[in-house]
Image (cartoon, rainbow, N blue to C red):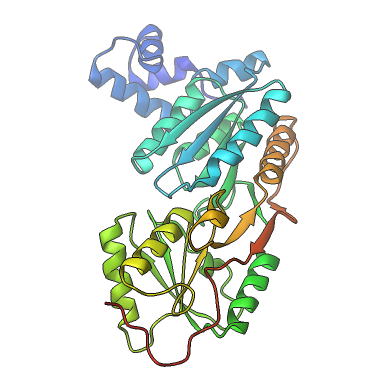
Length: 333
């Protein structure tokens, strides 16, 4: 059965073929007619440019990368992109990069823009549900989720690090040091690491999504340390962990003598900080190559599944973690 055509979109919208074509290509049409054509195209599942390209049997040799910045993309995305883009270019593909910062509406806009440009596939970092994903499926344009995939789009193949072993190692080390209560700071709704690996160790976690405001973090750290069951460990991404070290210094809470700090991402400056930061280090070259291989396989028509990249993470213990202090209380002044 053939797919929807531009003529069928024009017929459903009650407009001429020329008017429908102008509306879909961004030409000059009235807002009312543009809305009618867009609604007709969505109702029929019509994908401009991509549909025509598929009928010709050709490719654009272009892939898109969509960064969902609403879920804080962290600093590691640049390392992933460097390898991923290099791998795709070596395979003869051009890469278009878009960053969505305005929620689901911007994500839809960028995904629709990639379709209009006729990309052969899309890498979706921090993937979340979108009405456009069904149109990608209908157009047979593969979408590969990288770094994180929301539970609402399980149909997308997903590439991520196999982190279970390194988290088990980190949790065991922290519990051996006596830690039992911990707080993980997240930003922008980023899923907390401890929920993904909650089965490891004896740590009891609390989550706090604060954003990046230092004043808010300082107030929350002070509040946490004043609770009857105060944490002895704070965990955050690299910018958050560096900020935690600064907040602890201002509150005169020595690290690690009274409080330990861990970063979920390693940074180049982590060992050079005044208090070198214990971190989880990931091999983003390995990750980028695995993501590129999945996309290239999908472009060849292969059915691809989720990929757990093995051997790409390690626990780096530095001076920001230590044994739990004697129970004489932690005071934040």
